[in-house]
Image (tube, rainbow, N blue to C red; front, side, top):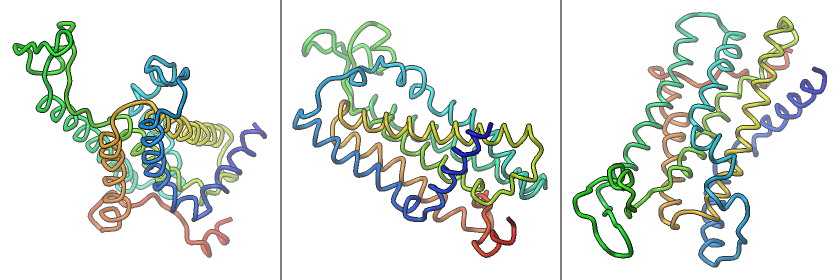
Length: 258
């Protein structure tokens, strides 16, 4: 497990760099703008990832929120319990998962509603099949639905990556040397897996930007991911009546802690 410890130390060192954390959200906006321009100019050749049937899209992105919760929930419990085992404290931290899931649900359902309200069902070419008034019933009948499709991928991949970035922050302030072998091993593996998920989300966000959706659909999806992250972790979670920010030590405290 020495190799895992080295990887963890390097990842912690990376996320401790304030510039990385400060500008990471802007990376998604930059990729969305540049990727949209490349798609419009048709400068990116077709590859394995230009097909929606690629393995990462089918087995990861399609169930991206499930992967985020599956890995982040045990990490959150293990990492936060090293700061306090108070039921109220851990409950508040788990509430951040509930808030994030609510944001994911509301945004995705809103996107579906907008696509239904702005679309029509087509059989072939421009032949309108008027009896089907929703994407679900239209596609189930074997037809094509054409509506304003805000990029759910741009939303969920940017939001999930930023959500994970915030919630893995306690790792930089933890005294893992005092933990027993099994919890430390599990925590380290979860931390590495969550960072790997961030990389996958960032890569698939890039693929979405250069291969799929119209420009405005991707921009709206990206803004829909960044805005709730900002309103929660930069505004609401600073208030007393909120789940609160993930625990971190002040640099001076951190030196004493270690």
